[in-house]
Amino acid sequence: MRVGSFVLAAQFPGQGQGEALHRAVRSAEVAEEAGLDAVWLAEHHFVPYGTCPSAITLAALLLGRTHRLRVGTAVSVLPTVHPVALGEQAALLHVTSGGRFSLGVGRGGPWVDLEVFGSGLEAYEKAYPESLDLLLRWLREPSVAADGDRFGFREVAVVPRPSESLSGVPGPEVVLACTSPASVRLAAERGLPMLLGMHVGDEEKAEMVSLWRKHARACGHPADQILGAAHVSAGVCQIADRRTEAVETLLKAMPGWLKQGLDAHVTVDGRARQMRDPLAYTELLCGLHPVGTPRLCADRLAATSERTGITRFALLIEGSGDLAATEENVRRLGAEVLPHLR
Image (cartoon, rainbow, N blue to C red; front, side, top):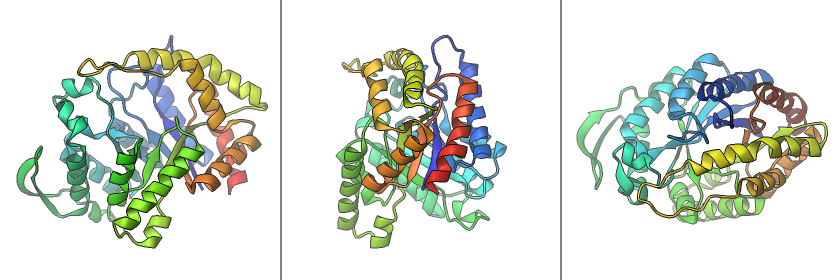
């Protein structure tokens, strides 16, 4: 089992953006010190829900500040960026980090980001599979040309080629965020592991893994590849000496952040949107994920792994909104939870 942190660089009420980003960087440094396997970085635009607008840029910084930790994006939003530009950056990080970089990509939402970056609603609604396939070709082939509905260009060389990494790993891992049967099928057809969100529980995640395997078998992927797919489960982790204390910490801080952050989302076309109730959502997360004593947290992670077959976790550890409390949470995760899982 591999356990990592999930970093949003969340801006809690009363905090500045620099404070949120400093906490994000520091929590990743502590994650390596504490023995975690990875840190996964979220990406958001124009909202305090997350103050990191470029997960791959922050990943570059953290790869330079760490030596062992795997650093991944969770996710880079593909419809707002050219897939070749993202592929070049991913290849660069893969080669220069010795293979420690994972590229998580996702579809994002119908937000105003699509207007600002000029990609338009079509990039979100129709062109996502084309963008994904172009990105994957860039990471796997020595040269690439495109003749699709959205992208068209003459053949050009891939520089740097991911296969040139001295690590011996041919290319960066690509993980696909999945929130629907359609996205599960998209991942399975391409043999990509899934990143499953923290808003769903074990039963739904198990169903998504089962559906992924069904589609992967139908596409003729090898049985060992299907059974060994390293899906990632996102969740929340808050550790305390008593479960009530851990829950209270999150209930005090997270609803304010969620309300401020979710209310700031603006759709590109004025469509109606329905956001979760912040308090109810926090209570849901406390019930679904490892929130409580170290032993309870370890048992919860083990149970999720057994029920779903998922062996990798990306855990939100900044739910208190406080730097010192976040550092302590990460250290306790490494010192008091991980030993029970290994």
